[in-house]
Image: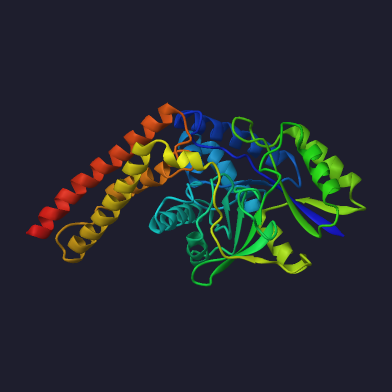
Amino acid sequence: MNKIHLICNAHIDPVWLWEWEEGAAEAVSTFRTAVELCFESGNFIFNHNEAILYKWVEEYEPSLFTKIQKLVKKGKWHIMGGWYLQPDCNMPSGETFIRHIIAGKNYFREKFGVEAKTAINFDPFGHSRGIVQIMAKCGYDSYLFCRPSQTDCQLPDEVFVWKGFNNTSLLCRRITGGYNSGLGKAAEKIKGIVEKEPGKKIDMILWGVGNHGGGPSRKDIADIEKLIQDKSDEIEILHSTPENYFSDLKKHGGKKIPSFSEDLNSWAVGCYSSMIRIKQKFRLLENELYMTEKMASSAYFQKLLDYPAAELSEAQYDLLTASFHDILPGSSIQPVEEMALRLMDHALEKISRVKARTFFALAS
């Protein structure tokens, strides 16, 4: 019997056509709804990634955060992806990608005791081949993404093995049906995909209303449960996680999986020539942060000063936020551009003071 893994999520851009305060409010609202439905619905599983959103919930509604921790332990809420956020996957340095993964993994390990094995970047505008090696060496075995489309990047199949420069590899799936579903339209989306592609042994479908939509709804869950019952003699449909999908794919996927050894580029290329101040300041911040860390490490090991971990960590989080896939490419509204420039100036000011203090310590 064929099997379909349903991955309920709620794609939330921290900023885009709104500023971060509105993104934080949307994260709290969506997580609140998802928590209620996880407690109400027996088989339902909610999936969500991006540590920055969880940090906002932890700060602004701690009682809700505690409920999420309980649901994670019960297997009703799945920590998906495990990065700090979904960055642009073309322009940041390799070091910045590693920091996204480490910051996210450390946070989810500390707060929830879990570590994701499938990396998630639904929304970025293409993906550098160099991140295969980074993800594989950071403990990931699979990758889930949506862009670029087949029109923009010819892949041998929607499921493929992506090979990195050093012969590392990841099992990948490009989602062609989008990561969202309209409110009350999830069962309709699932039924349409099942009827369009009836021969797949193992498949995955993403559903849930995205930005400002609130993720799952009671109607969607009820409609899906009815669909599961109606199709039970023909196909197994279950609420699931990306890790479970990839595990099933490896065991029972059937056909041989082809490989691909190039970049996954590109989509919305015009963004990369917009908001030049963002791009210039981002690269400056990367270089200033990494150089100052090396200086401070040298001074620390010579016992010339205490390592400024808190200040450099604060600057790093500013850097990671500024690498978001609707900030760094330049695809957000002007207030977000202004916010991002302030954010990076804040980090640069922090770093400049640390650098001066470190310089005088080394000069001594």
